Image (cartoon, rainbow, N blue to C red; front, side):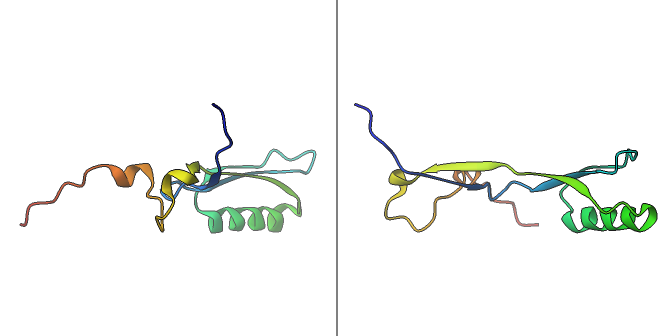
Amino acid sequence: MIRPVKHSIGTHPHGEITVSARCLDSACLWTLAATSDLKAADLAMVTHTGLSGHPTFARTFEDVALVRRLELNEGKQEIPPPSAQEPQHERAAP
């Protein structure tokens, strides 16, 4: 029997959001490699604009998505990410 199942999707709690960019001026080859430092990415684009006068960029944001099947977790306040289900090893006291 097939039936619909509710899911939710969001950014994985242990994942990073990264951004890359390229200048859209037709003669410019400036690009920004993917970085998780979003403020540094913004600063790099602002600096490029200041030096070149090119104000327009194509930005690509990427994250790791986590899909959760909701009905398996009814009654629970939070659904732990897969890595939280791994056994924790205690450290020996120094």
